[in-house]
Length: 168
Image (cartoon, rainbow, N blue to C red; front, top):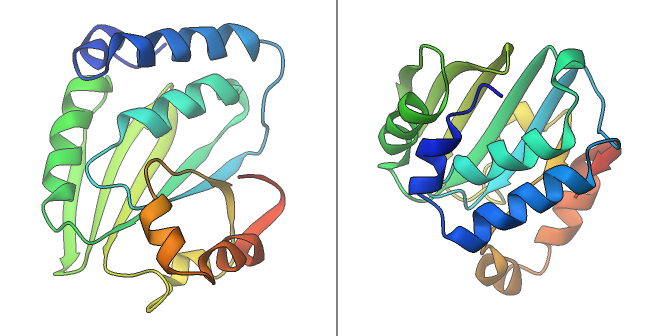
């Protein structure tokens, strides 16, 4: 595994690590396959560990060529923090580029797979990132219920944009 599990454990609760290890064992023979994957993570904050662990459970890394993480949040400090975390947990060079006040990209490799995180600052329902117009393969969220509860059309947005055979 190309993720630094010792470092990851320092940032998670023991029960979260236990859940990851149990899921990894449960899904050892059943994998999600697509060569190029787009994962949509609204309300990501500064979290990159959980979607990486989720992908580690679900993917057959040898068959994946690229991953694009599309992260949307209202927290402007997140790209710097996410890069700092990736510097600790992936065994590759991590490059951060600010494209504007509201958009940044982070490039890295995980398990020999090219990965790009595209970070947008703002409300996804007010300004749909162009990268999502062609849909996404995996929808990932944690603690996003508050937004979903206040934005009734959000679940319809997700269902409209998830690609056929995608995961929610």
